[in-house]
Length: 349
Image (cartoon, rainbow, N blue to C red):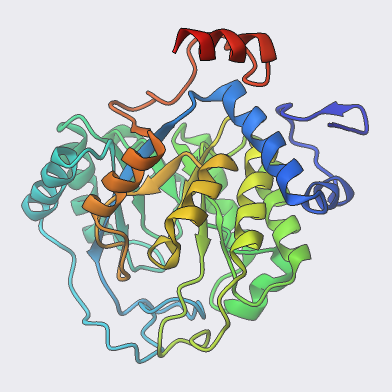
């Protein structure tokens, strides 16, 4: 599909709202077909990157994000916990590696890290990195000096989601601005750390807010290397506890557009998988998702068990990444829609 002299799958940072709307308005099956073509141009088929997420400091966050059970402003029954010890984090990382994870993500419920705590996190990063795992942290807002220290410690990815569009953002958060988030992403990118930034779908936003979220991400100076697309988990006690669940097809549509707009990014099927059936998840993989959180627990909410994910992978004949980058195509592939190649493969099998 051509879009105003642009070819689908082209790496670009100049998307217009009209072009994003055009993508979202396609028939779903056409959209997913295009997304799968783009996916196979840049990634191996049937490979999914697996990350494990650990809350290294839980609860008592001063922010007022309306979706978050870790905010000190909401009574969600969450037990507040102090920053974990380095040795405990390393043991959890070892266990994650043994179950097949290639990336270990550490999240702390902070507005911004205090210097004393930040130094401990740097030790965590060095220790986890020494295990041969990719490292990722999410610590809130950062300064340029802190991102330089994270880079020196060996950090691979920094997660800092935009959550939603700039317009809708003020409806869900008042304790920091959209520009605050963009500034942190800029510090991370300038330090040479891979950016992990995405959003949450199903917070009562309009479809146009999803257009604008993806346009903001795709029009950054460099596409985020990892783009988590979360489905809202309506946690009791938060202002969003009574929101109706998102139509799965709207979520799948968002995954597909994300893949087309950011062709070389890992698109992570993130929070909300516990409520998705196998068919919805399979549809998301077809639409270009190629990364998941792996393990029974996210920061404070449930995630499918390792056994359940392994069973799904076996049904779909999907292979998890064996080492970091294993999903990336190292040589130019033949288009999967080449009928001659498909015929030869069918005969050979």
